[in-house]
Image 1 (cartoon, rainbow, N blue to C red):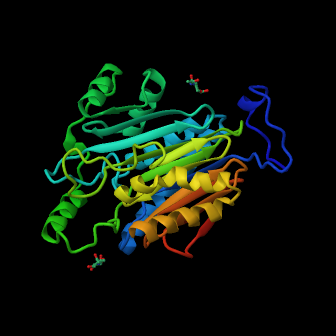
Image 2: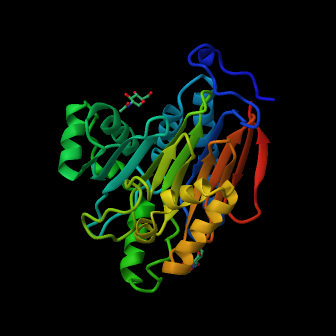
Amino acid sequence: PSPPRPPSCAGAEPLPPSGSIDMSLVLVVHGGGGSNISTDRKERMRQGIARAATEGYNILKEGGSAVDAVEGAVAVLENDPEFNAGCGSVLNVNGDVEMDASIMDGKNLSAGAVSAVRCIANPIKLARLVMEKTPHCFLTGHGAEKFAADMGVPEIPVEKLITERSKKHLEKEKQEKGAEKPDCPKNTGTVGAVAMDCNGNLAYATSTGGIVNKMIGRVGDSPCIGAGGYADNNIGAISTTGHGESILKVNLARLTLFHIEQGKTAEEAAELALNYMKSKLKGLGGLILISKTGDWVAKWTSVSMPWAAAKDDKLQTGIDFGDTKIVDLP
Ligand SMILES: *[C@@H]1O[C@H](CO)[C@@H](O)[C@H](O)[C@H]1NC(C)=O
Ligand SMILES: *[C@@H]1O[C@H](CO)[C@@H](O)[C@H](O)[C@H]1NC(C)=O
């Protein structure tokens, strides 16, 4: 039996017939596939993803749309300096921040993306404005920044996005250049969210600072619809993380949903797609996925991936294999 619907959903739209379809509210977030996270940082990351998932789930409970929820959850992670998105983004070869983000509404495949944007706090909000206020899907660099200014998005000094940790990370990377295989994600990834709302609508959002020591103008998978994420109410919603160049080459998000279209479960589809990327390209990564039936999965081939899932008023969190914790949500 489905839980009661939030009042704002009642009568808003006829609900799809229930039955085998589980129409509960679902919100899943990730904090990036990666490796070698220190123990104290792990705890801060677990708290951060729990906060983001709770924020997104509360938006759903108040009757908000899946798009509202994924935007809200990702903004929490962009504002958290522990994660490689917004404040806390990794630095490019010049010590500068260039961020990418995308968002998609599974109801009608509306999508918005920005890449190589600087000096704004929340690229995911700008991606949503691209989706809703322009006839386009994707704005980049200077044009995206001009659009942000036109929309009244406040410009912030780049220093507000740069942390001590990201400065040290760049220094270390420059010293150890070539020591780590390029197809292994570093210990910071991307952030993302997927949601199912009270009308059964699906959405995804993904945001990132990219990869440390990247070339100026490098764009990864995160803003690319079909690679960094995808949402279609007829199939599912997915946000990906990991080695961006590999994710782009296999179109990881759309590839995973293709397996679901072919009759695989969410779990099987995630495993098939991630293993394909690993065997074909030695590319490591992770993903979160909600299928149209409300089943969700968090899977990764990297060493770790902070994730959190809220459903049926329970919150699950994890970082490494087999360390899942479950708590009741208030
Ligand atoms: C992993 O982290 C530990 C402690 O933070 C560090 O000593 C070690 O060098 C790291 N290993 C790699 C491969 O980066
Ligand atoms: C898609 O749906 C959203 C939300 O219901 C709506 O705001 C938007 O105008 C729709 N876009 C198109 C292209 O139909």
